[in-house]
Each structure stands twice: as C-alpha cells, then as structure tokens.
Length: 137
Image (cartoon, rainbow, N blue to C red):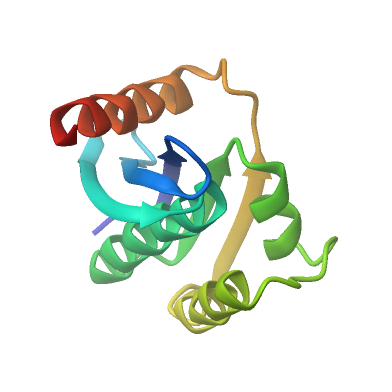
C-alpha cells in the first residue's frame, strides 16, 4: 500500500451551468499511475465539477489507505476554499466543501496545490474531461 499519493483532478462544464464531466489521475510515490478515471456528471457548474472530481479521487485514495495525499488542481477558487483562504458562499459548493471536510479525515496529511493548466498531468486530466464531454454530446 502506498503511503503517499499525488492526485491530479479536473472538472469542466460547457456552459456554466452546462453539461459537465470530471477526471482524475492518482500517482504513487514511485510515479506509477494507480488510477485514471473520467465520468460524465450531467448538468452542473464548472466549480461543482472541480469539487466532484476531487471528491471521487479522494474516495479512491482513502480506499488505498494512503497516509499522505497531495492534490493538484488548476482551480484557484476550489484550492483557496480548501486552504481556507476564501470563504465558501455558494450553498451548493458549501455542501461539497463539507463533504471534503469529512473525506479529509481519512488522511494523516492532505494538501491542496494550485498548478497551472500547462502542468502535464493536469493537461492529461483536462483532455479526459473534454473527451468525456465529446462522447456525451
């Protein structure tokens, strides 16, 4: 069982709200990809999709019994919500934020890092989001 995992997640919507999808990739401390996943969500906002992607990724990571997780996202809003820099005002995002607070309890250490969209793993999950949206339309 890996002790440290890196999660790369992305959510996207075409329209805001609009048809939405999520994708994530989980990489162990040796660089091995443990899971790559994408899924169509239906109609929601981009920020809701960003949260949903991270929630699904962390649920998988919890099942792997990882002690430490580093989450890489390109969403400034979600990252700043989760680091406490921004308050969560939207009721639907607040529900997802509260779910994140529960999931975080599964890990000894969890951190959230905002990375540019040009980061290679984030580009890959973004590609998966768009591929999933293309298939759904």
